[in-house]
Amino acid sequence: MMRPRSARFALPLAPAVILALGIVLLGALELLQSYNEAARRGEQTARNLVHVLAEQTERTFQAIDFTLLGIRDALAAAPNLPENDARFRETLKERLKVLPYVRALFVIGPDGFITHDTDYPSTPRVTLADRPYFKAHQENPNLGLHIGQPLRSRSVNVWFVSFSRRINRPDGSFGGIVVAAVEPRYFEQFYQGLSVGENGIIALLLRDGTLLARSPASEEAIGRSFAAAGPVYGALAHSPQGAYWAPSPVDGTTRVVGYRALGIVPAVVLVGLAQQSVFRPWREHAAVVSITAAILLGLVGALIFLVQRSRRRDQIEQARLSRVQRLEGLGRIAGGIAHDLGNTIRLVQSTFLLLKPSLAGQPDAQSLVREADQALKGARAMIERLLAFARRQELRPEVTRIDERIGGFSPILRQAACPRASLDLTLASGGTAVLLDPVQLEASLLNLVLNARDAMPDGGTITLTTETIGPPPDQVGIRRASGPDEQWVQITVTDTGIGMPPAVLERAFDPFFTTKGQGNGLGLSQVLGFVQQSAGDMQLDSEEGRGTTVRLMFPAAAPEDQAPDNLGAGATTGLEELHS
Image (tube, rainbow, N blue to C red; front, side, top):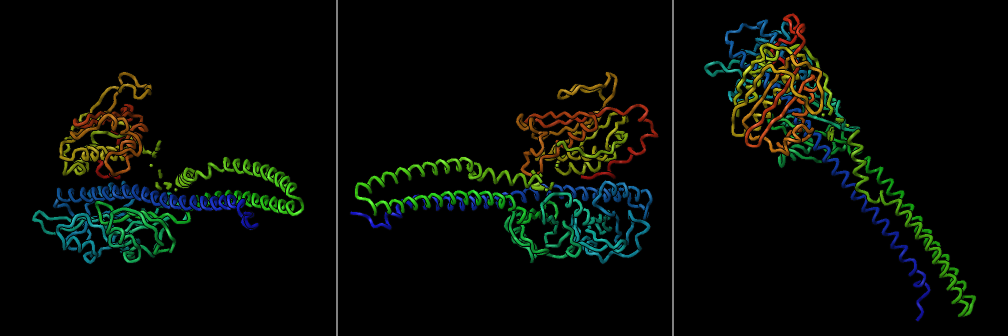
């Protein structure tokens, strides 16, 4: 039985139609998968950037709190200190120099009037007893570090955020507060240096929704509460960190927002990447896929046209010729179709071969996403990989007596070790001076003490010693030009903690390597970079279950530089220059 002509015409077209539908379906699936992957990558980038920023912000807040505790302890040690004591004010100013994010440090007495101030004598004599941060400590004796709402300074008329600690009298009664005035514009300027793409935002808020700082800066938004405007506070109820998509309550731009609540203070860090920036690589990929699909569909259309033309020719031949002639005609037509299909198939195969890298899809999408992340911490940010190494920090070296510097800095180190560990200090370098950046030295020692404390979850002793030694042996193949009689100063930090297994010890200096489950893994690599920039050496010895020892070694300064007249800048106490 002969099939109807329409059925015989449709049958050869079915593979071409199926092929066309397959191309459209595969392209749509590829675009959908790459879209979802781009969204997932955007969320991961936002999470990574906010993780790094939260770590940095917590370190900043810790440094401010350590300074406040140091000032409070200094006041407790001198209960009869007169108001606006010049020497104490100079001590406050020295502390202020190493806290670029703090505009002023001041002490408020129990009556609400300032007793010590880095802005003295320009600060007006007015009572601050009505300030919320003063009332908070006055009413709650057990309140620890308090971060207040953004306020306008009555002396310089700029926004500031108060970080404060209560001062107790010997009998436990209210003795006033010590306050650090932090300017939101510091965080705004710091955030501006991070790359979060076009229309990206970074924000710091209190847990009650009050905006402390934002980049891009928004003067009218500082101090406003966004608890009801943004979904972050609903998300915080389920998890202290994560990511979500939402339009901004400030400018209406849709972003993927990574958020993380800080662990030590009631604050939240947000990083928002604009939807347009996140999906820009996907749009480029989608253009490639669409163009390729259009080419393939054009080829399939050409195939259909050839089939239709051949079929029409076949029908004409069948109408004109006899059965034999029709059979011969069909043979010639079949040969022509076979030839045309062979050429078309080879063309399609070649096209698929050229298209294969693009149709792989996922690697291309990943590559485009990685290229976009590298262009922000820069801005991590990203983020950030990102997004820190040879991280060449700008040093301000000066001739410094190590023992004096560490001795002045020891209250902060003891505070950092407490309450989990005790600090045993032995300074025996005999007043030998070295040429290095004293602020970076203090930051490095603080980092090592914090690491040692974290390595002793059940408590223990951290031992910090100094001594003079001869030139250390060559390290990692670096030959030294030091003579055999040259002196070096060695600083040793030892803990009685859990130690490191060989695999961890081998990677301890790798950037971004950490075993804590939190932190950015840059601590030891930063210390190593500082030591090497100071022409020194660093050694790390550790054994699992037996603790860890870190040695910092620096060449002594030239004899002429160790004269007392040359040590003025380096003899200030490290307690005044702590920063994170």
